[in-house]
Picture (cartoon, rainbow, N blue to C red):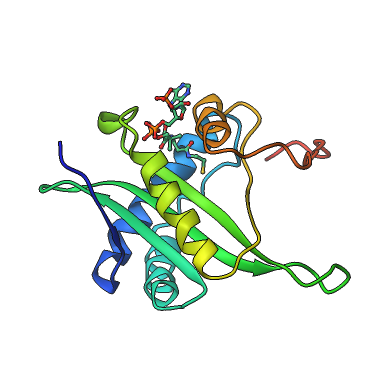
Length: 161
Ligand SMILES: CC(C)(COP(=O)(O)OP(=O)(O)OC[C@H]1O[C@@H](n2cnc3c(N)ncnc32)[C@H](O)[C@@H]1OP(=O)(O)O)[C@@H](O)C(=O)NCCC(=O)NCCS
């Protein structure tokens, strides 16, 4: 199966939104937050994604076969708060590969291309968040050379209605 990695275009906005929803659904199944099911919200979200694709401080990469899109990565250049020395950081928000084509190196290829792009943009570091129970993603990120930098802790206060 030949895979091509390409930058997203405006026309990909709706498909990308579907992939983001699929990712969040996967996250929910390994302990992530419950996903918003309001269709109106997601329609507006797709419009925002199209605007975001056009911005120069972020990258939307798609892994494509000759038939369909099978993987996706979203990343963004962020600056540290001003209390810290000036640094450009590349934050990977989402990596997703459809279940049928997993374990073929697609996520690793997407991430390597994105990290190369970020270096070219002058980013000193890359970071990301991963759920404690997401073994697949933790395996991926370790393989790419990421190390634990900090923990994010949470505690339940009120039951969800
Ligand atoms: C995590 C995910 C993106 C990996 O995609 P993938 O294309 O299958 O990953 P790759 O084939 O590039 O695998 C790269 C490495 O990741 C690790 N890995 C991937 N899948 C794994 C699994 N099921 N179990 C353990 N390690 C795994 C391995 O170290 C693998 O290297 P190897 O195959 O040489 O052992 C994919 O499983 C996915 O989309 N999951 C749901 C969404 C998600 O969790 N995204 C990440 C958080 S935003």
